[in-house]
Length: 350
Image (cartoon, rainbow, N blue to C red; front, side, top):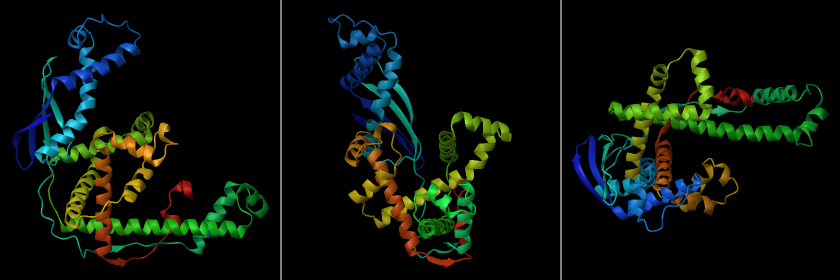
């Protein structure tokens, strides 16, 4: 593989990726055999060369797209590392030469990370709202549980429905669970308050294309969580258009990009250590596919390593998280009026 930089400025870069003919042919043949075996097609005459076999295949363009889709991630990652580029948008790829028996030449256009000055990230001063557990929170949860199980005035009936031997044991479990939730919510509030101050202390502008890509990414995440049909029904019922949704999502999308860029710059300065335990914890938190539900860590780790750039992305996320924890630890924090845990929980948990 070779990569050649064609044009570069502080905002964008254009480069060429050259995939050698043998690598491309191998990838094409893998897709050819998958397609023909799946369709129960008769095998071609044995005397035909791979090139002739592919030339006579009517769906060559289709399998060529699949072959390049599999090859590109590793070639792209190697190219940006070789050229020392730091893209912030997905690449725009334009084939320049894809003739059989010849190297495949692709032109790639990317928007680069913006340049900005990291002015302040230590000693940020922020007000945050702690979350506490009160007796009222405990009482409300007990009332909710009793209504849910039809045991408003019957302790024995309530205990029959739940895996506890006594009301005291149930109460202790609720208290323990609520306390852990309150601590987590408090940590989130601290981080959000400090991140707000970080953004205000280090202002910079983004190209519209960068923001728009993040907007579409967040909309796709919403669609994935809700399901396409549910989302379409929701949009229709609420009278929203896609343009309305883009406008709603845009402020958060811009904040997310800026926050990640600032945290990456901080990580470059503090160089946080990433241990194998950090990677294991991060992988364990990732949602597993149906096929991976019973897979152990080593198996999941191996599968991730087989995906070009996947492990690097996990390490990058860990670095950002450690950078965020660092600025929170270095911040000057002031408590504001506390919030009850019950007011912080989603409705389905109340």
